[in-house]
Length: 158
Image 1 (cartoon, rainbow, N blue to C red):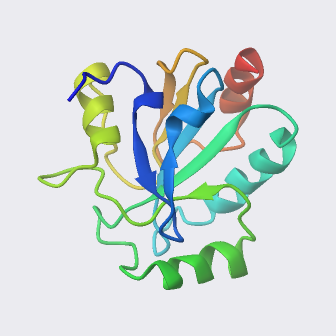
Image 2 (image 1 turned 180 degrees about the horizontal axis):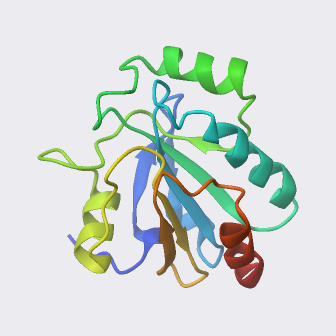
């Protein structure tokens, strides 16, 4: 297997079970957030949707990677969809549940860990990748998705 050098070298299953190849976003900035439906930070979905709405006419792509790595996500994608669609009317790409830490860590998060020495300590860690597919900046759960510091970084990339 070839070495992964950028975020665009990965793929995952979306919430509907369709393969999403990040290579289709090559040259575009990506904001990837590990999410969970039963977390104290779950209301941040609203901030992510605000970003999605604000930047939908740009080439920024927002991706929520749902995960039960911290025991706060449903196993059934239909239950996750109910939270995302009914409560937050999510329009951005959402993955089927993946592991963001541990033995079965998804290759995206293993690469982030190996390449940048970054790993989510909890749900709603945010990773912003530049147009070259390199990590530009990351933020912890306490930083809201539509905070000024994240918006300022996004503005520099788009």
